[in-house]
Image (tube, rainbow over all chains, first blue to last red):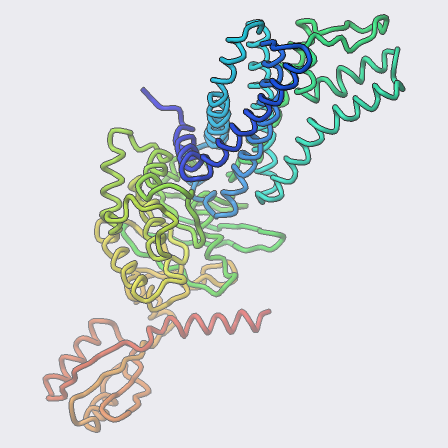
Length: 273
Length: 309
């Protein structure tokens, strides 16, 4: 059977990523953060409404969302730039590997890291489901959406990496982008909601869905899973989280991933002989 | 390998201006030129890293513009500066490049072991790449260029920044590779390294090929005078007189028992001269080539370059 051409890159990236103390440090930190957040959520829940599997699951999923969507892109943003920095890129592109093989190999290794991080959290997921109350549909959607967002962020990080050719620069750009998407947008939404400037009108609906919900995946998934009705009635916009809206969000991130992928491949198409 | 009328512009500057060369199969072709003459650009075009603006490049009959992958199969390239993925062993590193060159999986381990054997890195196969010395990394880069068994090796300044021992080892290795049939195109500033084992040389001057051919052809064309130093065991005065009468000998200088002179004849004629000296009782115990003449040509071109600038 003929192997997938990007396998060479995938294998070497995995070996580089998963060897040495770096990965042990990352995994330990990830697990510590996850356990700390889960315990915090557990304490808050016990103090307020009592032990509830679904609420605990939401805390866990939200924590995983934040951690994975930070670790994944940050570990991918050196994918191409690091090759330039250590002068290994020319040795790679003068082989028979095509740009698409290089890109898929690097993306697959980033996805593998995501899988490992997800797998590390499995005992905690099982704990939540053991308590009960987690709907399978929400469980599946939550992680499917996480997968799509993670994929999109990693393709974005790879694109930035091949644009900048300096890992430190691409790391800064990716960090700022992540902070804006996952921090600034929800913050702006909160301010806007509190002030009430956009209340009771179609403009708020527009801002809610497009400006905040779609661009801030964490807010979107948490809102959906907690059945938050963020739209006031009578706005003229279909409210709630209908399947259409969910599909739209997933499609949005997939399309973004494809766009970043195409941009990266255009940049990697080197040399132009 | 045939290169004809190659043109390349980089950063608004025409680096190659109608450059041409023909590298015969099994040759060791030395590319010589001052900094900025276009050696690296030429090798990067041949290695399919840069798109030529004009001209034709054919590798074993395959046109570079029409079949890049086919050309890559035929070429092993070692750039002047390079790096490897970190955190992997020497064996894994070569395995990666072997896979990238589509070496069949069933042959992979054997190929990697063979190549490591050729470059004498077998005992370091399980060491991490970052633990290798500069000379060993150079050997690893050469192994990487050999992993898909290419017909032609393109080596850009392979001996730069190597210590004399590593340089010597590299030279022996390249001679061995040439012996097993590899065609080698090598650029270097270290002229004695080139003249020791190159069968052909090409002088790049301002993006053009100023002179090319076998060492003898170039020598004849530019009337290159090789300078030799012979240490006689006795009678330096008689040796001096004898050398002054010999054909192709010029500028004889005496320093005790050591005589230095320029020689414009061929290798064969020089051997005959040495035999004649011995027959006539002028015994000597050391003969060394002080200068191949190529370095004079190199400096001559450098001066022209500076004068032009």
